[in-house]
Length: 255
Image 1: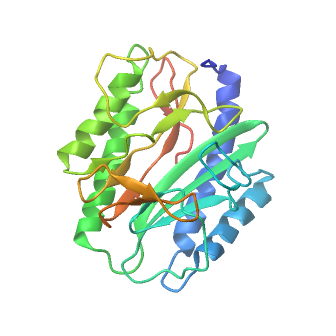
Image 2: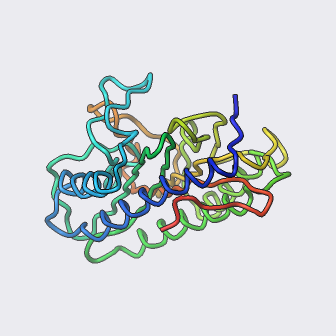
């Protein structure tokens, strides 16, 4: 069931979203050659702690997971697409990093993700990240009252496929509110004019995930969480929590 949020609830979600935005900004600033993924997780923990927020990631265990998630960020490097577990791995020059973070504040959740490079960027990685950001912007632009979920999916997929990139079939965006994952699912590819009609008060986490090699195939790493490209190519992940309003889409996790 899709819960429509009141304007007051959307304001509360904005507060949670701003915590997420600050955490991602701090993590990206701290990311440098030689810094470990565990250290980046500690940076995000500090931001959440200072805000009096908790993490919807820490201890989360969906049906596909073999164990609870042990961190407050997902840190996915190079050929890891999403759900990377922070480890002692130390960033290297040219790494492509995707960070996903959430916050729970006042009973409401926020969820957002960014991708960036460390050190000297590869031109192909810059293009991949820019395309992911363009796909996210296109999805947000389609998130207007009167459109449908398929319009968001089509907007994202058009940008991704137009860039020659692959898209994960089984993973995409989602509704968000009291819980991090709510109805409806928001695919990253679809047909326009199809699916649930968008209404004022719906709040969605819109999140393109792009595979550089152009294939849609991926696999789970032995840790049971990290999803990696089958062809070893790099990946990018971007995400914002967005409220559908009569005045247009409102990005609640804007940085």
